Length: 207
Image (cartoon, rainbow, N blue to C red; front, side, top):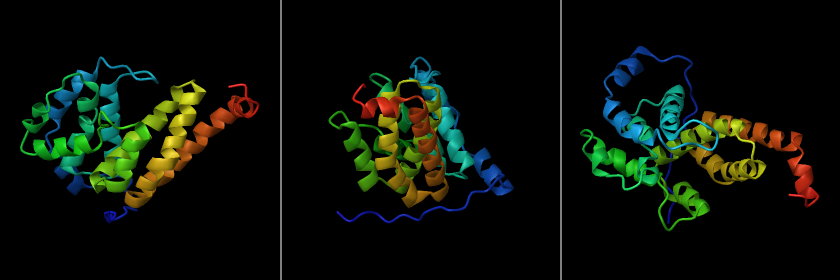
């Protein structure tokens, strides 16, 4: 299968332009935020809850200059299908006129029942749309930042490995600035593993 072609984004404005502000103003996120509140009761490994993670992913996309209505709406509900038991997908479809497009993007970044975590990430890397890769990179930036509050070294190591093997190749295809941030996050998290003595213990076969 021929790999899709992407246009890598390299620019990153330090301030939102008026044109972007007006465009963002006209994007109705409230119906999607309401759906995402169903994630408030789902705790995260690093603390907080999954609803806050949706909002964080949205903020990261805006920080990187993405004012794409489907992408932003999908970021607000990207974990609903996977993490809310028996979630009714029609709620997204009927949220507004872009609901079907939003659901399609959410399903692209949703792990399927038969997929292992590596298979899931490899699917997005190999066949994902540009929107899916951008969304997954923003999602992982949020997760990697939260990793700074996690003290389980094996979890941190696995997450760093996943990010290096699967997410960095996505980022270099779609957004160079996201790629740079992800590299820096990997470096800081691996430094924690070194400073904590975990790496030496692992080499010695003690963990």
